[in-house]
Amino acid sequence: MLALKYHQAWDVEIQQVASLSCIEPDDVVVDIAVCGICGTDVGIITDDYPVAIPGTTLGHETTGVVSQIGSGVTQFQVGDRVVINPTYSCGHCRLCRIGSPNHCERKQGTEAGVSYDGAFAEQYLAKENLLIKLDDHVSMEEASLTEPLSCTLTGVDKLAITHTDIRAAVAGAGPMGMLYIWALYERGVRAFMVEKNEHRIQYARSHVPPECQVYSGFDEALAQEYGETSALIDLCVDTTGQLTEYIFDHLAPGGKLLNVALKDKHANLDMMKIADKSLSVIGSIDSLNNSFARAYAMIRDGIIPVKRFISQIVDFKDYQQAFLTVGCDIASKSQVPLSTPNCKVLIRISDLT
Image (cartoon, rainbow, N blue to C red; front, side, top):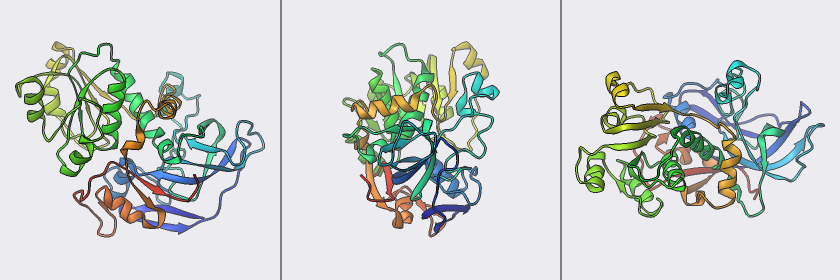
């Protein structure tokens, strides 16, 4: 079978590798339909997030069709359409026991697309308990956004929103920014969005929730929304990792800053303000508290319109073009400005539907 292998920074290629088969009783082999490009994939390729083990197949936002089942599998059969949860946890280590399975101490060797062969491949070896059978009306493409939406719900849970009449913002109009602004909207919070890239702005303005505005800068946003650039806000989700200090200085008492960007970026924060203004600076990653199943249910029921975020679908053989669309130029080994309106880019591995 074919798989997109990572060797080192900027060195990725499609290779012929051995087909997969079930080994353990709870194993399930899934023939992959589509797999989404995540910021993690880009960070691995560009060396901005150097976590992947050389030789690993990239990719983790994926759906497909069951092609083999282990001897102990009872909930699935060959031919079932499924979405795959790529986040393994052992359930027994200290962090799993205290409610942080997304930081399982035995994660090494289990992270799809990082230390375990991922889903930019024709097949993926999954565990039965990490699959959800797709309802007939849910497309492979829509369901592939279950994993990023589950990460979004993890972050929104951490915000512990108890009031809807709050001033809220989302920084960044990429896929995570779009998911967050819609997840907040579903909780009754109307946020504004800030994005500096004109192509992302163009796409976002026609796909954000009703009455949510997109601005090219925070000063403009605060002036338009609240009448002055010095206005304070109650909540901000930063998907860029670049605006921590600005956002921190504009938090109202009790305000919350949620950072979900995997960026090697440092910020200076006034510890006096954190205590005196009861501020919260929060980080979030991966699925937690059944957020994967909850995310699929929201997609299934049309609560979050994920189809609107899929801007391009590119064939597997054209993977370099797919990554170039999100600014990752593998051929020239450089990051480049976006050249077309886009949000979530999917790679079509096969014609399975």
